[in-house]
Length: 191
Image 1 (cartoon, rainbow, N blue to C red):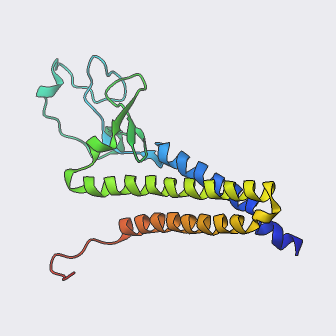
Image 2: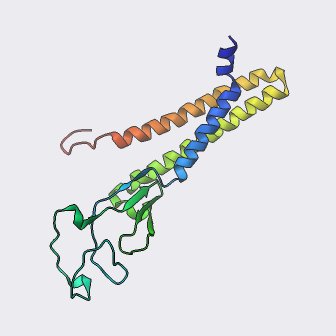
Image 3: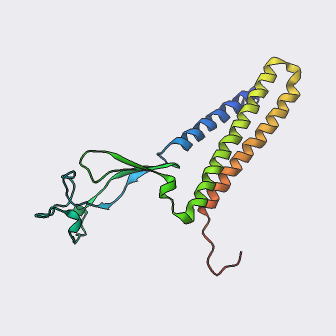
């Protein structure tokens, strides 16, 4: 019976909510949601780019050159990239020194997809807000339970509202996730 009481304890619920809040905050601020490499044709050699490039003998201005690309991997470079909800960063392939070029999600998102991107950001912020409310209510439950044993009824009320806010936060996350997976309606189908 004591194991069951420890599993259902308010302290454990508070700790789990704090961990969830911390992981959600890390995911929101991180730019490492997706990490990988991209296959890109090698750029033409220039004064700033002497390695991992395609040499063009006798040409001073590389922009005037029409070049026929081979199909082998020796004509490609594989720069690394990482993407988050706010930034997309990729290795700059036009210089020899390693440097990263980061761009904002707002400049990368096509005009037709900006509404969905803002909806996703808003849903993520609402998720974090609901988890903060849940965490605050669980903290109040712990404080009320520690201060006065007679306030147990208030503690249970705080716990119930915290559970409601946690479930609402989970529903926001689930609905945002499933809306991204849903296939777009076909042009001839009725709503």
